[in-house]
Length: 95
Image (cartoon, rainbow, N blue to C red; front, side):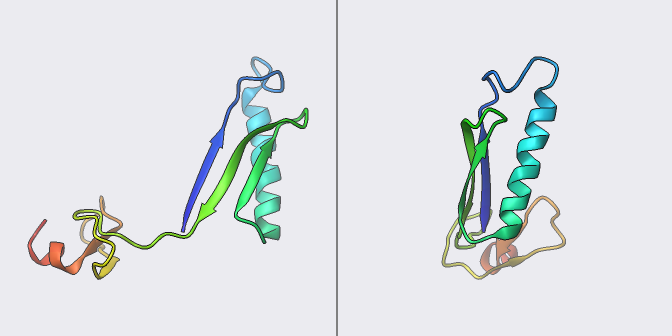
């Protein structure tokens, strides 16, 4: 699963010097909605009620980070910290 957050912080709700407070408020609101669950697309609402972005969850097929083939046998690889997943073929070939 992937999670993507896109938020525009340029309107009146993001008052100069308090932008972080508004972002934190929006994130707290999103956290409550995510805990309740049931949907894959959560709108980000500013303090004025405007939609300023979305938090989206997507189901994805695991892919090898080296060769990017979806059909590879992908699994966690603890010996290479920079890679979350790598297929056995790439691992065997030392990629």
